[in-house]
Length: 288
Image (cartoon, rainbow, N blue to C red):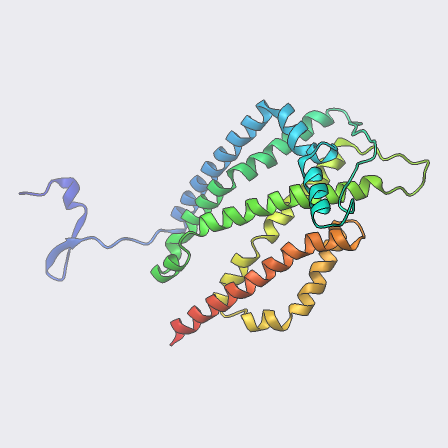
């Protein structure tokens, strides 16, 4: 059967016979065009999340953004029940002092709502955004590297969202309870502005999401031979001190809450050591 013009364009004469054309490498402008569409699709996903949250902004603010500012927040009940079960009495039971969040700047509530809905939309759309980023990066990897990184979108998304939940349900309650209960003088009342409160909520959650990506970062560093499990074991004591310092910054200055934050971070570090050892072993096998 004769080939039509469209079929002929897909072939070329090579080595004395008609063969399919070799795939041409993309130019720099082609890469920019492809990246542009990945960014556009990611922004569309974030915008959809932003619109949904803005439509339900009353529920979003009352139950999510301002949730830890209420004594009815579920995490406070969890910690109090845990305190009773482990025999610590009321050590982990927290009661927030009376305070009122206020908006003092013109259009502060509207601007803050727009900003927090966008951030919330990004968190919701993060798995898809990372998927778009990975679709752009993956074709540049060797087949062996693509095989090793299979499932990375799911793993990174799960770790990021787990970190967000960790910051929201664990870090934020302790930090808010401490900061709102601390007074420099009895004559000064703690009535934070809406903008400052949501800023700290972002600080309590988004960095935790990034910290929980530690095993992925360690995996790639170990694959490149830049980090080893032995090195992480050697500096384990230094890491413990660093973890306790981070826990002390994020929590009130008491031992119970510092360990409550520090233990999950230490477990994450130990998981990273295991990831480094496994990646290091595969790296050595690839060099042999």
